[in-house]
Image 1: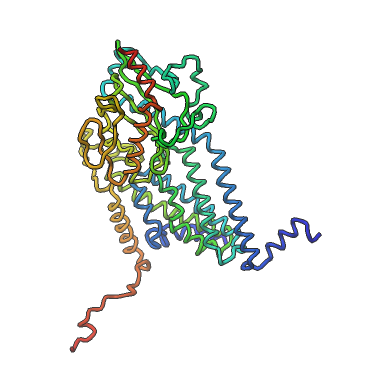
Image 2: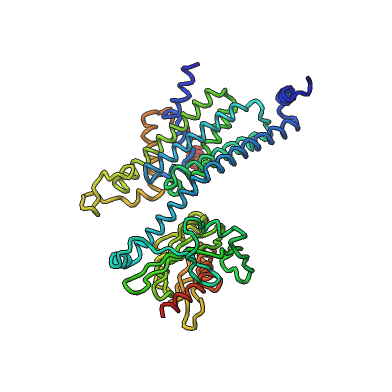
Amino acid sequence: MASSPLSLWRRFLVLPNDTLSKTLGIALLVALVSATTVSVTSVVLKPRQDENVAIAREAKLAAMIAALPGLADILRETGAETLDTEIIDLETGDFLHDINMGSFDFITAQTDPDQSTVMSPEEDVAGIGRRPNQALVYLVMGTDDLELVILPVYGAGYQSTIRAYLALKGDLNTIAGISIYEQGETPGLGTRITDPAWLDTWSGKQIRNTSDEVVITVVRGSSNNINEVDGITGATRSTTGVANLVKFWMGEKGYGPFLKRLREAGN
Amino acid sequence: MAKSNLSYLTNPIVDDNPVTLQMLGICSALAVTTSLSTALTMSIALIGVLTASSGTISLIRNHIPTSIRLVIQITIIASLVIVADQFLKAFAYEMSLRLSVFVGLIVTNCLVLARAESFAMHNRVIPSLFDALGNGLGYSLILLLVATVRELLGAGSLFGMPVLPLTSDGGWFEPLGFMLLAPSAFFIIGLLIWAIRSRRHNQVEVNEFPLILPYQDKPHD
């Protein structure tokens, strides 16, 4: 009788509030209940939140494409209603036509050990740890040439993963636009990387120099040449993060092989 | 009993308003009042968190050890704020992006802790719920008033719907950019406090430290 759970609970409740055991017990109980509430809400609502993020991502992509100069005309001329979406092999740069688009989840592929490769610290400029083996690309064809390639890119910022779409012009070297659709940088400081005025400064910059090396970078103060983008004061780590992820994804471990193939096919 | 419960609810709306009399929650009143829709969402989130936290704390008030009572109160409030934030992200994603950190900052809104510490710790559950709801409504009233003025004069719209025709659309109204900046909220809240206190003189605070000029001390020196 004395040791049934209910009577134990009663004995606990009648303890004076300031005894050590009651203090510890109450602290533990409050922490347990609070943690459970937070975890349950977070797990239950996760699918809905992911859906919202996915919708926002699509909208950002559509908005970026709509905002790129002349693109609406290209789409009208070619009669293309949507983009041509392809899955590619990042290692070889080949198109993979035999993978079902519906079953490929780019986000899952980024962390799944079976679908990704570990990057060594020297290779891992973007700070992503693992790189997926396959990736999605979006192609926009003009009347006879490739007009635009849109590549999903991501990498570590100051305190979050920055995810963006990078649009390259037909020469596969000039940036047509960049659009950041997900980040969790310091509000008011790092979040300024999403400022449209700053993102606009990327347009027209060139990724490679004349000797075909990836040299695009963010500099302090004002940029001096076609390969440099102005940094943002107070958001140094976040802007460097953006520059690093562009560097990584344009390099040999990123979309480099794929872009090379496209260039060869173009010639 | 029923009458006093009702007074817990109605008192904080004007007579003992948390923003204009107790001067609590000013920070978020500045930050989220550029438009009515953000102010309304913030108000609903705050009322939810405040009512739930006051109810919970009042429910367990007899078992909270005094040595860790603030820790326990903040733990409960913080958990509820996270829950509210998660709900916003799931059901009002656009709005959660516009409110950004300010929903998370409800946890540092002095109003919530003040009601927990000064009321819910010493009162039964029902009066605590009424008190929380009343204070939440009082806070919301000020937020919505400030937001109405700021959105109307700053963007010529209410809830995003155009009300005053803007000059940029061929109308006559030139929006006041100042209204979209945080200091304008200070002026509006200041004017509100002045208006309320000129009607209700009992809210005027006694000057505890009056300025005494030296020559008044020793007039014949």
